[in-house]
Amino acid sequence: MSHQFSTIEEAVEAIRQGRVIIVADDEDRENEGDFVCAAEKVTPETVNFMITHGRGQLCMPILPDVGQRLELNAMVESNTAPLGTNYTVPVDHRTSRTGITAGERAKTIQAICDPTSKPTDFHRPGHLFPLVAKEGGVLRRAGHTEAAVDLARMAGLTPAGVLCEILDDAGDRANRDGLHALAKRFDLPIISIEELIAHRRVREKLVFRQAEARMPTKYGT
Figure: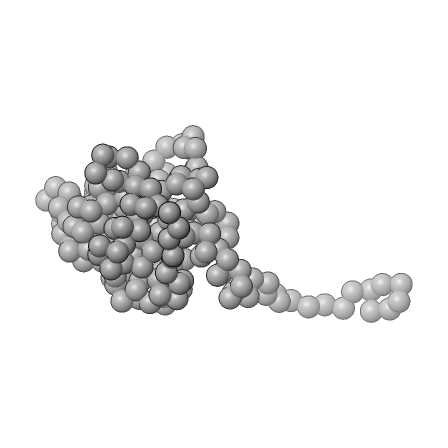
């Protein structure tokens, strides 16, 4: 069945407003859809919605410098995951009792977004899984991790997201029909990573002048 995706502009505006959207990747890649929202805008209600209706793992895509600042070390020394998803050690905010509740996970997400937070503000291990995105976003790696960071940045927000994989009632990855049905049920924008890549390539200036110099040639300088 053929389905129509939302525009990238609609998705970015929804992210700016703190809403949840659905992001689908290529059917030849993970063939997966994730709930995605901006980390800066997350609430306990948002987390509860994502884990209730998504059923997958709740993760927080971040940029490398955030991981370095908060000493969020890689989960493993040698990453053998098929798509190279860059998990860090999971964390809880130090004020958490167990860390598993929607409110506690929202608090942990908000603290990671806070530029004044320190490594000692978090317990390790915990229940929130940061994912380190590639610099360059979906133009470097066509994954949900990079898409979440790109969308938050494009919305003018802190470049960090929250995502949760979407499973169907049988516990399998929701297919395209299921994703579009879910988007319709909850009135959510739904986009593909492929369209996000195309949008960025068209709209963004990808080559910048860093310096200029006269170069000697046989014709002069």
